[in-house]
Image (cartoon, rainbow, N blue to C red; front, side, top):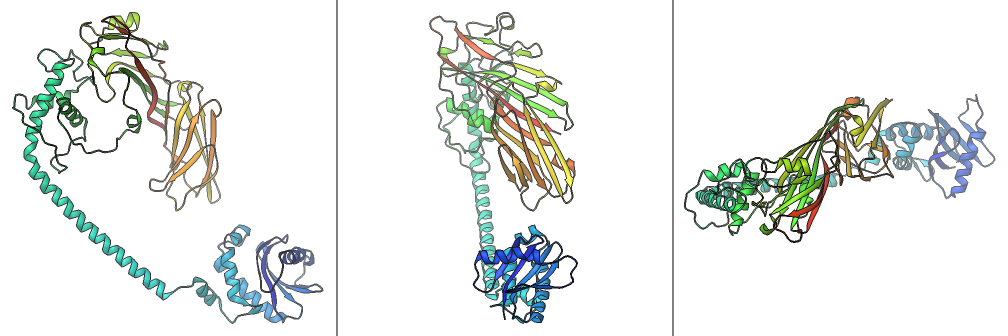
Length: 532
């Protein structure tokens, strides 16, 4: 007189959840549940059906059956009471009464069945008691969590007090170290003037607009000139390594970086506060090892319309020169370009424009004046160019985004199409999302994805786009949202070829002899690339 099993099945007899209360093999219970739909006739009002060995007591629950399998000697009135209690318990643990909801909360339902039925007999419990037993709340556990949280809060308070004490001590040390800053300024002025005098400046040692030391972005910047001129003529003293106080923070701006470089050129030892670079592409570039290094870089600024078309397309390129030894400075650079008539080139004022226009050679107006050596950063800029277009065929990568709302979900399909002009590397497509409680459900993707929950951004990463994957797609599902929530889409990538096709053909030495060894770097990077 016992309940053999309590089960939830589909109309076709598929077992979703089944809890056996007697020893029974899996094949046996699956056979009993599979035979049940054949025994239930259409139009009958009974809540049970019998076979030679067992009795099925059942109740329809929307598109499912709640089913008790008992032996024929069981008290059917008690079984019906058990069935009614189970029908009230199930909605408390399963949010939706369909196959997906029941399978999702299968273990919770099995635990609830165990609280209602023990060894095949119904327990004298209510729905509220079943919920309380399954929650398994513990007073000792709750007390332990409270004690643990109080310890965490106390530790945070101690950390805040220590942080405030450290900040105060830094401020006081900064006030004490402030007196040594004037001597650093004087030393920086003398170092900057000496460096410009020995480099590519004029005879007085102060950069003018006609030299590579001018403030046009080539050599030392005008910021350093003005900074050093303020304290020109002061006697300099020995400079000790600055402390990290608030009154002495070097290395945060370009002006301070170049000031430190001028001190290093004079042989001074400088202790710098190392911080990560704000531009990862620049930080990853290895330092030059060849005597001469030429860098071709194009920065891409593109704004695409979500419905198609180009709102802005702008390419700005530079050719920079880095020389390790001053002896290699008397040179000329022979360059080649793709010959695109839409690209406008602009040379530095000290470059011989006629020589470049007629023979594509970059050389100084004064052949006896060498290019400066030891340039930091990207080196000495020789040539700039710019390309603007409204032609969509010039765009290296197009993005199409198709959000569509279906019921309580928004399906978003995104595809990319890459031009055959470039092989793109380290492609990252960042899609803004509405505020979500959990990560989006990515159904399909060509590549990898990562969800930034703090900024609510879905990042789609493709390591390389070449002839094998010129197009790709991604599909994900989020709760209902307006289509404008998925824009603007931002894109980052790099390439080893450029729109201009600029390259260095050879180095021409002006002092005779063999041409010095040189290397060249070429890269195309995105500065701003969006779909709005």
